[in-house]
Image (cartoon, rainbow, N blue to C red; front, side, top):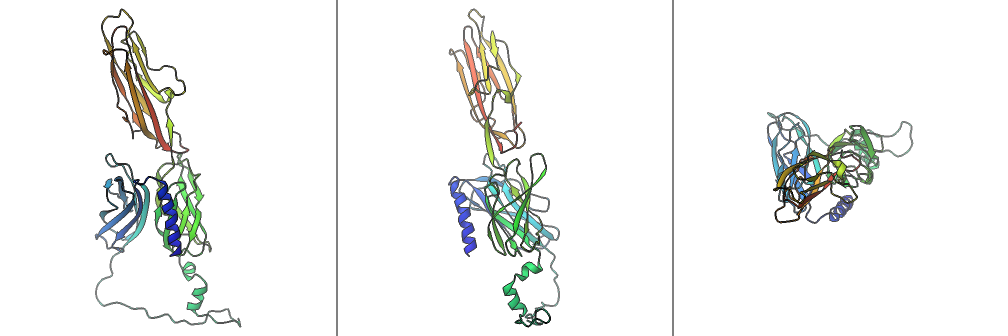
Length: 381
């Protein structure tokens, strides 16, 4: 179809812009659909890219799977629903071992219903009678039967409420997302509802790229910020003013990074066994947020040792994304045991410590640089 081709092209352009190996969740299906209560359902997710990433399934009945790896293009999960109903199944990134989280998200709906079962064959509805004539009383114009009339107007949109049943694409600011369903009718609008980092309810209209009776291609405003990872929702309003029920999906923020300064780090303990000790030297542009310096004067007796401790704490969805530690001494007798490069990555709270040794008339230094990453427009402390 022309619309599907154009939506696929838009999504492909977004995929090409990222890493060739980066993995993103793009679709999910469930079978059988409809299913019976206590019948095993197979949930199949599909991802782009070759990277093995972490993901999980949110079943829609209050439960979710444990985080899993995603090494192949498709991955299955099994679930059993115990009660009748319509459930929204979501797949989204999750932390699993040392794998990166899968990006993107997808969802679909499954109907669980008890079979009427038993006895007596099936009932077949015969063809509709294309009369009585549909026209205003006294109108001398041409007569239209039901079939001809529905060729001129969207009878589905007049009869049914629109319903969003699934989506695929990149659910983050600037991302292209296609919503599928039924009864969408003629072009209207899609309204996003989400919570900002202060838990206040916010709304935004999605940009409409394509609109058909069964699929709407949209783009999330690139300027959207000030929120964390969450379950948001959209409501479709067609040209007749009919609204769909709210459809839930995972919304991800655009991420920013910040290099920490001295004021972002708390000194828990600075040992003072040497003659000169400092854990909070002057904070100039480019200086590390964690600096340590210990020195013994000429004439000091014996080596001195100590342990310095610090605390880095960020919040509101921010985590440490990069660290580097350098260590120096003025002789072979000086040493520092401290964190390795990359220590603390992925943590919101990190308490590094540095054990050191300094001999008479010598010095020892250490420095750690730290970068944190989190949702754009949200404070990290």
